Length: 98
Image 1 (cartoon, helix red, strand yellow):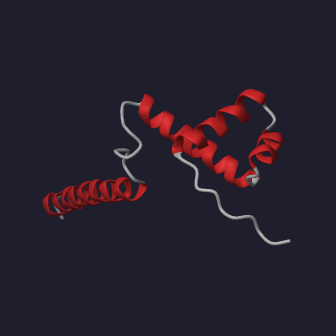
Image 2: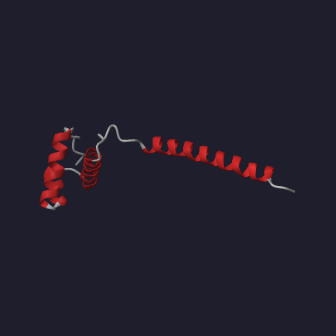
Image 3: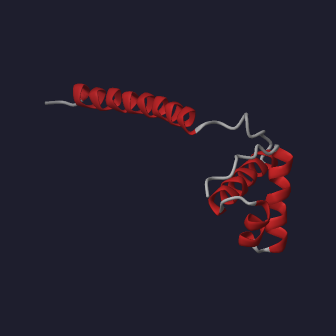
């Protein structure tokens, strides 16, 4: 027996499957009913929760800042602050009497 053909589901269909699993509380039965792997169900559920969190936070999931963008921005702030600290330390050492 080979693998079953892949079924392309719409976002609405995935959402309905996730909701059914959440309402029933029986994820395994939901996965059997729709013939999907449990890890696929959990991935859809996690993606739905992330999208809902972003939407409730006032941003769409597409507009949410990526982790890489956030790290690049923080690295720039850290570089700026450390540069200013180095300048201040340098001033202290240059101005102190010997």
